[in-house]
Image 1 (tube, rainbow over the protein chains, first blue to last red):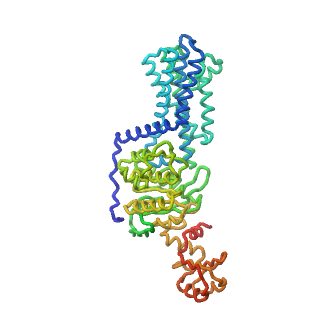
Image 2 (image 1 turned 60 degrees about the horizontal axis):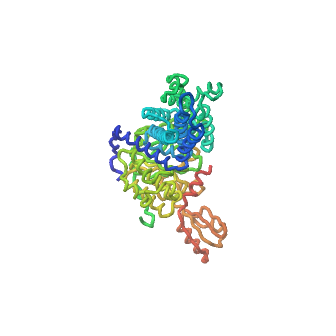
Image 3 (image 1 turned 180 degrees about the vertical axis):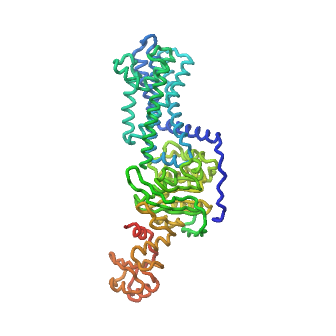
Length: 268
Length: 319
């Protein structure tokens, strides 16, 4: 038996199909796992829906911001609010937990392509974002008679999916820098003010001028302005400026994450 | 599954056997200045079960992490199948079992297994994997609903999912009942019998004694002892002060003989009495026994044993 030739197995051809299947499986089960974790899924979906119900449909009934129905304006902002929550808690919270329990180490010791892990988490957050959007859109249409066209709905969904990336990066930074026990608290401290100051709960024009200036730093502001723009709402700043704002934020987050990761590696 | 422990078939290793994995003059210093590994070298061969022993903080986890590709050495070379374990492609032939705080609880056992099987191009067939880890009947349960032992067995299955040639097991039988422990030992032995290599870290020295072809003892970042379990026990006894190490046996009995008399018996190297139980170590056990039994006819509760690996280990790592 020990005289069996020490032949190395033929190097397996890592076909594209095989790798793609890994990515799909990873994403699928990350989403299923989060969906099954009721504490997560009910909160992440429930809060934005309830907030929209109260602030967009029950209060401010029939009122307008500019020429747009409040319910439709809030549809855009709460879509972003929902996705950001899913990204920060799902990706940030999930990574923090898996880092602390050693599960991430097991994955890293396996032949799983590391990118598959990150992409899976992003896709799951995006999926939750899409679920939230669909629920609040249905509520908006049925309760407040919001008129939204199919292209507007599709663009909102597409923006939400792409918009997951900067918040995924923020989630990763939080997970790498903050000890696991503190993570949920820190995520909340960042999530809620960032949403409010980005104009997700109240229109940005209602906030004091200095806060409106500060919002230029916030990805929540830029993303919500982009979604409002697809609803043909006259927004401040060009689309390019908002995309650049998101890109800048993402790059800064990636830089911080890279440094934090290197520091973690050197200390373990 | 036999109730009696199968003796290890010592597989003779030819001197030139290529190493499946090796750490070569590894120094690992952390960013905070701590020197975890100090010019450490070790080799793993085809078809071997190697147990890595050492007190906490000795550098075992660091050494194993280097082999798993989770970190890089400060200096020295890590090779697995003559490649760098930091490349994902090299890890297509390895499987890992770690001590985890938690694993994703809202995934079913079979989902966990299939996710990991999917990483490998040639995974172990699902039915074989379930049988190897003893997971029949619980495949549809959520991981969070499993008992401690069932969770361990699932993690063991994850390590075997890719039918790997090199398996790292960190405390694999913690929390398992006797039957499950014996079953896992049998499975580990069959891995080695099929030519695979197993690197085992354990605090449970009976496990190292029962399973390992070779034991490597690490302390303070260096290898302090390496050999078969029998060799390590002898070396440990030698370190503990026995004059020769060849056929050292421990004799336990209840006797009234005073210590001075015991020490005068031929072959006796140490003798101590603790709470009525006399413990004698002897390099000529048969001669010592004849003398002992002749001196004290009322002697009872006689036991003759090989030195424990635990004592050898403590002796080796006490400096």
